[in-house]
Length: 86
Image (cartoon, rainbow, N blue to C red):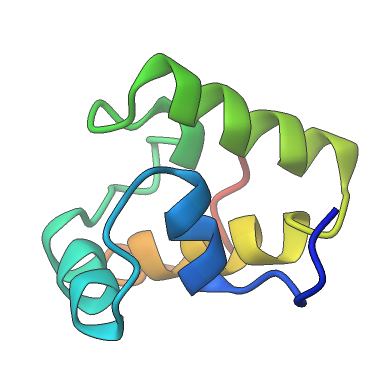
């Protein structure tokens, strides 16, 4: 288990991505999704990354809130009303 509270930086680490604030901001800016694409189905994830995202969201564990935050951030430019579910 982790000693730290899960956050976007640790989540990006778990996904094997650059977890600096600048890199996360850049990732979010350049990977916007339309509302019809669930977070875990985005074509930029590897199979392992998709599985990690979906499993933690389904388990509703300590990472689920971070998954929800990332989901909202990656759909923010296409958000109408409500949010896109996984």
